[in-house]
Image (cartoon, rainbow, N blue to C red):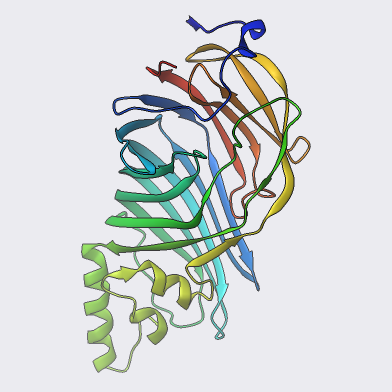
Length: 306
């Protein structure tokens, strides 16, 4: 286990924003991540289980770092909405998902500017309730591919440099936009079957859902469900406070880290200058970043040298 400098030395280290270089990497152990969206009786819940998350600096030119990642995940979700014809209740299980892509990080704040990801795997849909037809889809795993882009108007940062004990700072307001497309052979089959049934006066899918097939545009789908693809994060004054410096042990080693409290204790962030990054995050983030509930992650390995 690697041991980093003792607490008594940390005050002599720079607490300004770290400088990253191409080839630097951080690998995190990530427990379940919970997402929750609720608005006007429209609800989407999602629970993701992620393998280790490696983040590798692949570009450090300009105002942003580009970090690449590749991991595997599984998940479970539920959609409960009403488009005006009656309640729709759908349960979705994701299995064997591979995810790879890039994260754009602002150099001055280490804030996330955008995420581009490609996903490939299988999902199974269980339609619990819907008002349109007595026909049902078979409960079989459906292979899919998806490209997903999340872009923030203002980079989302949970840190504020230079870091000092006793410092308090806000979460800045921003909007983030979700775009992308979902492809599956079975979407083409569903589209074809629905078209054939239409010739005989039957309907597998309602018109507002059928137009989403055979290639599902994420923006169109979210708009159809009455949610939209632009989400707002309000400014939250004084949400972060750097309490003290602690000696903390994670799988990557023992570090002197700034203990940053979220909303007076709903969560904690530990930033270690010797690691050049956050080494641990734990807590419920919904008061800080709406739609994200539980996040728990720890640094497993890094090659960063301050």
